[in-house]
Amino acid sequence: MKKLRLVIGASVREQARWAGQHLYTLLILSPLVLGISYATLSRLAEESPAWQPSLRLSLLLAAGFVCSLVGLSLSRASTELYHLRTPESILDALPVGLATQLHAALLKRIMRTALFGLLLLVVRALTGAGGFFDARALPPLACLVLIVALSQLNAALNWIHWGHTRQGAAAAGAVLTSMVSAMSAGALLLLIVRPGVMPQGLTRWLIIIGAAWACALYLLTRTLHARWRAADIEYAKRLQAGGRLSAFGAQVLTRRFERAVAVQLARDLQLTLRAFSSAVYVALFIFALLLAALLTVLVTGWLPAVTREPGWFEATWLPAVMAAKIACVLMSAACSILVAVLVAYQLPHFWLERATGATGRQMWQTKLWYTRVMSLLAPLLAWFVTVATGAVPFFYMLPLLAECVWLWWLVSTLIGALSFETPDRPELAMVLMLSSGAVFGLFVTIFWPIGFVPFATNVIRGLTERGEQRARFCLLTEGD
Image (cartoon, rainbow, N blue to C red):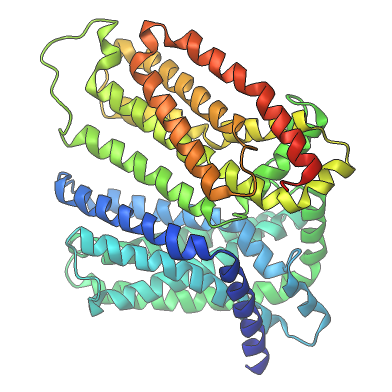
């Protein structure tokens, strides 16, 4: 227990140092985003229609949501278990038992999952399912947090072990365990956000079953950790050193880009996947909030009604079409401005680019394609949500997709071209990029049919030379 306290104390001090370096994000940006998000979500919850899915559909959606949480945490959970390139790697050379290391990783997972639990309590309060401080929600919430945290560690163990040994029996057991965990956690999630959907008398049994499964999952994870970690740790380190844990391989990107651009782009995308800054979470949250707002606007009747059948050229100004294009512009801008934080994060390490012979043009092209890749889902999801709700005439489905893709290209390209304008002031750069990209995109949304497309293309071309020169200047001076 003393060793565990020392390990946790070291982790707490490390997080405190990180917080000291991100005071602006913690004290200003995060409260601002959370306040705006809470006000928006509360309004959406009040105005949105009372959609009541069936118990089976609710359980499937909740289980799928839990599976997505587990899948998104695989990389980070693996790092916490095997200490891949982290200060905790020194624990392997110290007399610290495997159980202590597992407990330290589990506590980290529980703390991260507890934030998700707080979000569920907020959703519970907004939807009227119960109060935020309702004591009845605490038992299922505690079981849910434990099951999700243990499932993440168990999935990470099996993920690394499967890549190392390719044992079919172990993989089948992992799939079965994940399915049981997802269904159990999904039922507990429904007890928190929709307690009325469960039949009377099942609440207590679901909590008991959840607690029992959490205990069984802990014993299973502890056994597998003690059995597999020593044999799999070298494989996990080789995977990361060789880049095979990366979701973005430079070998694949080299087919499309020159070698220097492909390597830098793969590195930048992998840094984002690992959440190099809390701004990544903020951008994802804003993206999800805008998508939810689009869906709510389309299904609640807030848009003006269409009184007659629109023509081909009139369809571009339909309320639903305009809502989709505006959402596409805002979501593209929200994801693209991450490049400002990334450039500031990499600014002290630009000597690596100089040492490898990278040029300013290659650096600028890397950040340009980074913004495009990061915001690629914006036009696709905006189009899919609009079409799925039936708010767009059938004949305008493909033209709407083309418009969304065109707006995504404009916004992401403009923001990417401004990547090196103020590299040492990411806050100012984000304001500049967001205002320029969003305003430019919204202007094109309204006026592109009357000849704005050639002007937009010329504007972006005019920024190319300046962007390359700014990147070259930052490469030589590191932003000084």
